[in-house]
Length: 247
Image (cartoon, rainbow, N blue to C red):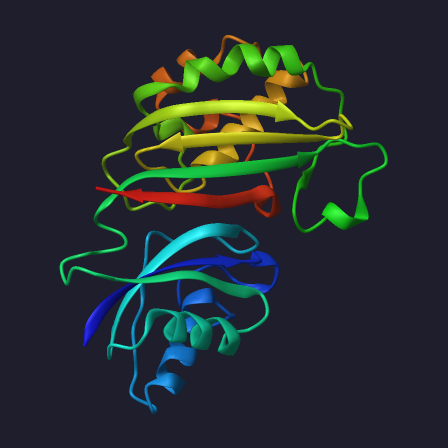
């Protein structure tokens, strides 16, 4: 047996998230079913870089698993063609036996898409969160730098998280507008993110852009360490796990 690292993409629309659970279809379950078939019925377990929620997409989720050694493209092609259509296996490589997809993560990049078109696009309904209200984009741009650096992000963590240490470092927090002016693309890169942290950050930024929170409120929200201080949680369909980097 050797350890494989695989980079996968998936459309989260019809998944109840990445992690296997008793009820509901998950990415982990579908990949494990495929690997078990490829292994003549012997169960194979995968480990992901982290879980994504129901409806959240991935362009560059990373998993690892142990399997008999095979030619890499044969392994990638077999896994890619035998998993369901809403999962793609982009790359497979053999790594050191000590590699762990979750515990050795150095940095993650997420993006969040917001449809601000009027009317909304029916073709983006599963791939961007819709925001129908007026936005002052200059206020959002003003607020973004306040997220950078190392902070206790308790205020931006959803209740239900079992993680005690809520200190994280954000290296990049940017927003772009597409050429048509009807979609926002937020990019966040950091050493890790808390439960629903990016969706709460985006919900807060949209509230700032709508004038219902001041543009300079981020430092005060961080200082309060209280989820109630931040804005609402943005819808999951706009969120994408883009890239995972390792030591």
